[in-house]
Length: 205
Image (cartoon, rainbow, N blue to C red; front, top):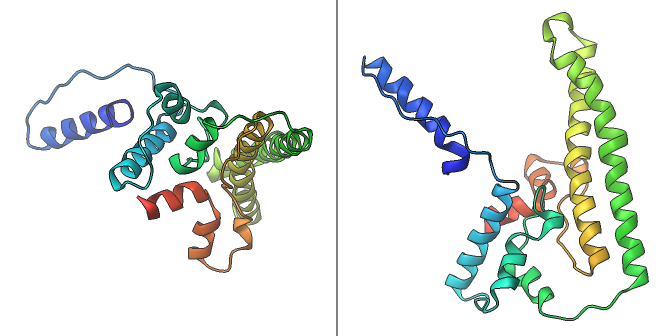
């Protein structure tokens, strides 16, 4: 809360007090936001709730717990892993598997393609229209909006594919995070297919 929202709430309170003619001054925070703070906060909360509910045993090895919270492939863009899925994988010996490594590298390559080739190129079109909306109307706005839908999907799902593929090369299985969301037939189905690890996290916890 402090890192992400302190300045926002500080400014909001200042504006509310100023409406009443009261001067409210609090120092602004200049701390840098830690990388991946949302993801490891969700994972730490999920682990704590799992232990509280007794759905998992508490982890005795601090290094395994620290690895679960800060597992680098998925730290920045997910998926948000469950303790009952990832923690047991740290406790078992895993030998190199050529087929698994190839599968992981293919998934990483596909993720890089979605991110670098599709999303980054679509962002040029989208930014050109969205940054100057008064200069465009009609078809260009519609095309930019459709392009943005694919840009944000390829960007986010591309990162997830890279994370899942990297983990697979290292011998770990992460949960699927996207399942062709634009094939959904309803809004409900869309949210069951988009950022699956987050939507199921809210459902579970």
